[in-house]
Length: 401
Image 1 (cartoon, rainbow, N blue to C red):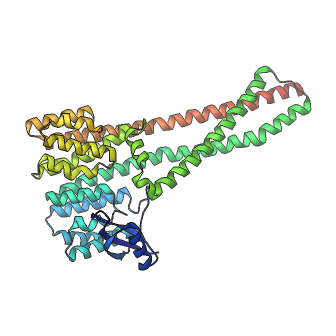
Image 2: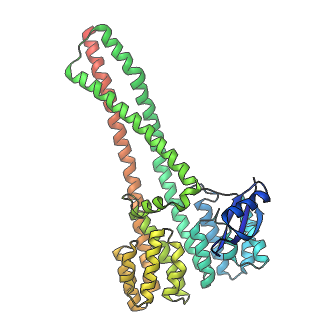
């Protein structure tokens, strides 16, 4: 089924655009009527659509793409020629197709930021918004250099996560199989043998046998529940419902295990964009208005927009940012110092580095805790299961002897 890119006007008169799979132009027209999109223009794209966590361009490829793009922008090569060259050099078929189509649109008079916005189905929102900011501020080289560093760190973090979690997941699967074997084959055979001999087990042996059965049952139930939950979460995140999910946004912003890292990721994103705009000569209020879409959380975005209004009304930047609920105390202090000393762009760079470092350290701590916790839990369960079998076997051998 082909994928179409479209741009039109919604019922409220706002420009809307996106990607839609449709079997024909008639089916696509029915979709426009249903959504209330008027005067749409569309064309078939060679790119495909992605959903949620599934990505057509991985972080390592994005990091390489942004690094090369930054270098070419710094060489002052015409932007349309950079896009053409990047399309020629790209080994990712989806990225190559998108860049070729973007080149055609730029050749027809579109700006890079206008063209790339149509490809939100393959490019991350941060890359699209930062491209818009870079083109407006005339600092695309700096923007793509920042994006390259960001995606390179993301690729390294995901690699560490895979190296830590995947072996442990395999270990958990093997341990679950062993536990299931002991529960459903070894234990019934042992119980039957004890019943045949009429042996009365000691209190300790009987307790361990019952306790090991309980622990094994709990371990199997928990393993199956985790597997089912992971499947449900994966399906949900790959669906389009997760894109505008209120509860998911609230969970990431305020969840006990997510808020620390998520808030610092948002802080890095906002600080980088603001620093770039301020260095280009954009005023603080105007820069904050441009950056607001980068706050991809509705509640936090509303508070950030309110902070923009407060600063326009003359409020100190530190006092305005505090109610947003994203920024740490250290971040706010650095911003306030930068505002008073007219070095806000430099202070925002420092705040961004601090938040990025804190987020990376938190992720590494979480990864370092997962591995020993899983090993200790599995060791305890297997030890109890083996002990629950060995004690009755020892009693049975003693009775036979």
